[in-house]
Image (cartoon, rainbow over all chains, first blue to last red; front, top):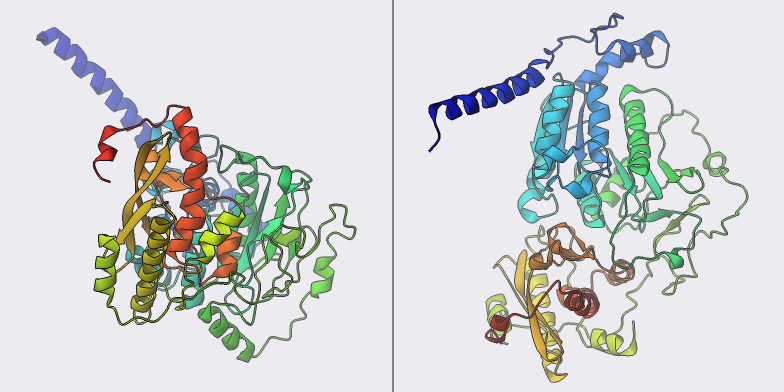
Length: 391
Length: 168
């Protein structure tokens, strides 16, 4: 049994810890009602508002009216959210179902003491501390399941600061299924979004602006791969699924937020597709046209709407000019990889890809696997379920 | 894919209805086809003396669970299977998970989702929407178990449990 002295000592220790904690949160700044351009040490927005005086951005303070949804708060998404928070974005909506793990510590943003917390919760806490002016909304769930997908769509269409649609969705997820789910949601809603990604070998990445109907959607073509200038067949995948580097992820997050700012605040030129090869510091750039036979019916519907809309007469940069990024072909890359072992000559989409970017695989016109097809049955679903159980 | 795998694959009937779980009208039809293909595949396996899994779903067919087993040195190792049907199915394959092996092998993503070979996704994409859950089992989980389980046993990460004998 502890003595009174021991207990008093313990109370004092705990009080000291509590005071430390309070001091930490106590230094949290008050909210700021309006962005000021005044150049003083205490103004967190002075260097951003200086962009106006320098003639880069006309309307920087408008950033506070915008809402951005970040889907996936991992190596790319967390850094993306931090950049937007520091830029003073109006509102962030974060989606992720994962928890912070020590295995994430080779990436930026999260800290070891946050291990075990949900990524969205941990991120929202840190971000609110950095900039309490940003409105935070978090959702800790998997967007690809039937239980959550409708809610995910609702938050995109109603989660904006004004109760309407968000201004941009940023895909920072790490898998094909989640990208396809975001694609379905954005095609259905006609929502503009950026796709982003880092390859599983950590040495290449990309961002891609998708305006449903106007540009290729994520399902218009097989996933694209930025050439890494190494023979993929020599890549050893034994014993691991994926590698990651904070550098590549930081570069991709930087590209993503830079283009987000340009898109929202209407300055500079927004890239449609921008690739990054870390091994050769090579940055292919292009625009991808939508596929008229895209398997997503909402993509085709958005294409129809876009084609019927009168076009502004602003002269667009001809696609050919953009394509001249890389004239020689020192990597020996062909547009569609016919050398892969399962190569199919017929492709659904004649992709016009810039050198240094290729489709991960090709999709033939018809199903290549031959065999018997399911026969129609009068047996009910319940009966089939029972049959399966009794096997 | 070797000839044996090709033969196994070609004996699983291809599906007809392109529908995901959000398509209320067509999904029940697709679900029936999924069950038909799975029943056929399990029966084929039994005939070939290679019965290796059972699956069942909730009544909506959106959540699946079951067991798979693997024989190594005459001992039977059994694992629980679970996965959700993503809203993008059948354009994307279900992500099959063996939760009890989560954290025990690097050939897994969080939650025990198995890490498939580079060939699986292109193969699935080329055959969508005719491939179903049975094909995902044959092309995804089957080869994964064949490579990973002997490795995990040899490393001592998984050990033989008596109780798995009872549930045969």
